[in-house]
Image 1 (cartoon, rainbow, N blue to C red):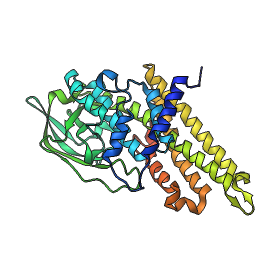
Image 2: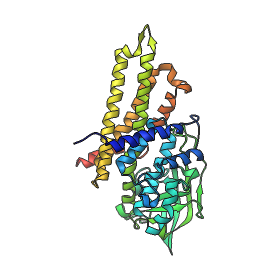
Image 3: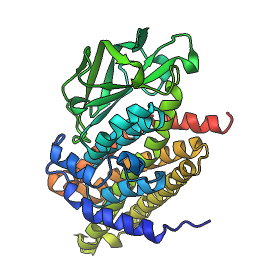
Length: 376
């Protein structure tokens, strides 16, 4: 078993670290910026896992995760990377894997180039990651479906050109009761709301999307009718692994900044680095990072090998998201009062890390998934 990255992977990671340095946020309250989106496309982050024939980079899950980790490690804005990841993993890959050939041909080049922005319209006011409880309904009509319902916390929602959404097509169908759709923003009956006022990940705007007798043609069904669950599960395998590589990079740079700070900062006549509890805290930060990294890389390898990655994906998501929050809090403790001054950026990193244990399935949901994989 070889835990080392190949020379090619190391070089690609290094190139991304260099290229992504100008993606840092101009301010902690910056929203979506077209210039940043174009840069993300130029770095091929919007189509990293899409075959080259469709305009992507043709990378597997592990190599895609390494790109996102490297970009985050460089100091790229976490919210901007989150917007790109939500676009790619929750929207573009379902189109790639499940859309009809002509739909793939018409949508994928624009999605990979950044010409089209995709929004993940899954969550509802009364339903998070549970597709069996979706209130949004899709009614069969001649040539397609009529969608009625409301989606909330739609990542990229206010600026998206295309929405990947899910609706109940058979209330009594159980696992086969939902269907996935790719819906154009200009579809009659679709209304995208204004951006929500968030405290973190601000470069990824989120908002409400409302469907009122919104017609979606048959060629925009992803997979077959009733196949919403496997479409969503596939997107979550990628999202819960590759997206969270962003938080590996974030932890890496936080630890690096903390190490520099404790070497330079003196308190009561001695370096903070020589205070044992401070050194212990940094050791725990490194332990959490490397443990999560191993789990995430294993999850990505399972995807690349065509295995069922469910257990590894759930463990990776749980470990990395919890570590991101804990490490951000530890960084705040190490910096003390300076952590709450915007010039140091620690408070921004904490605000960006805090949602990680909630989106893409809460930590409690990941524990349930792990328990299920254990046969409980």
